[in-house]
Image (cartoon, rainbow, N blue to C red; front, top):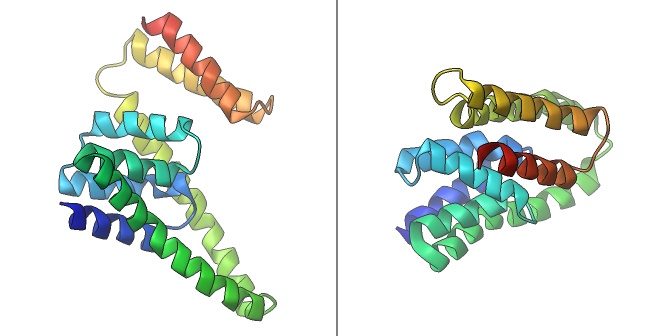
Length: 178
């Protein structure tokens, strides 16, 4: 089980680009493939991983690893997630310092930007589908949508800090869903 955790998160770390939120679909696919968590548990884990200090991807690896194999599972999953990035960043940094002015480098970077945005949007849709739209449209579902839209407005229009928005959303949740 520990080797499977390590290899899975090593692959995720090796083939995922764009940061934590862009990695959610990849992590979700692998977790589902191995049967480590259901959709509801995965959605809750993403919320907790997003609220915890540090990278969403690293926190997700720790949470999934702990869920599957306790403390040792958390350590193994985290190592699997970190090692590819560490190795690749060291190699890419050396390469970038040599090629950062080359037109092919700039073109490739420009071409990757829309993919990252697409992965983030996809993750948002999958996350909303798993945590908000779990049945019929009722008052609960509508209130979740309203909270989400208010959070988006607070972030985009009023430029509130994400931690502040999460805290306020949590307080609203306590009052609405108690």
